[in-house]
Length: 138
Ligand code: DAT
Ligand code: MG
Image 1 (cartoon, rainbow, N blue to C red):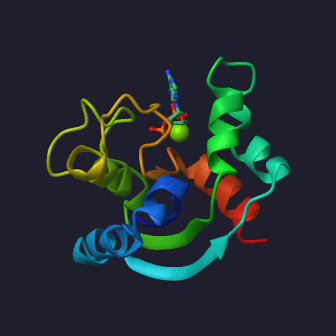
Image 2 (cartoon, helix red, strand yellow; image 1 turned 30 degrees about the vertical axis):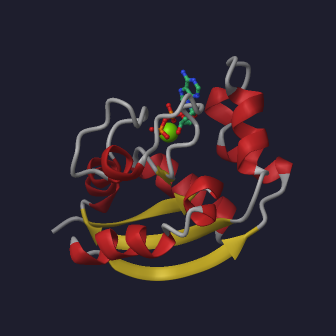
Image 3 (cartoon, protein in one colour; image 1 turned 90 degrees about the vertical axis):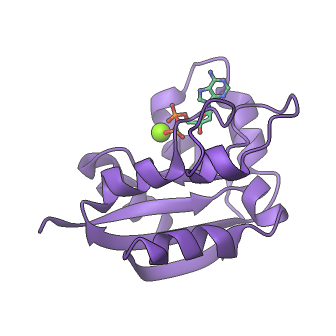
């Protein structure tokens, strides 16, 4: 067992489409545990820190603006190898090509929307998880 914690965010599109319960259902059905959860109106500063690795890229500003567009549900999730496990549940970044069976593949809409509207965020490494959990759950 390698019990880890990861940060999951239900992004503004997921909250607005009332998909928070569906995301939680998939996390719990997989056997992971919810450790903490809250609804957040994130500030720009938090989002800029959260996405610091993408600063300077063309999609950075639209991404931050999108994350400011509505409430976000932040979840601390624990489980065996949950960091890579949740990434597998989420599917690849672009909902268009995310596999069926994944959150983004099953629920992500492709109607000419931006890639950032892909419903969820999941930390991508133990280092990212520690950094991001410290930001969102101070
Ligand atoms: P992920 O969320 O799968 O970890 P990422 O960390 O590479 O993906 O990017 C963060 C978010 O930025 C991603 O969820 C959606 C958006 N994004 C990534 N690449 C993009 C691109 N080429 N065009 C527009 N948005 C993009
Ligand atoms: Mg990422």
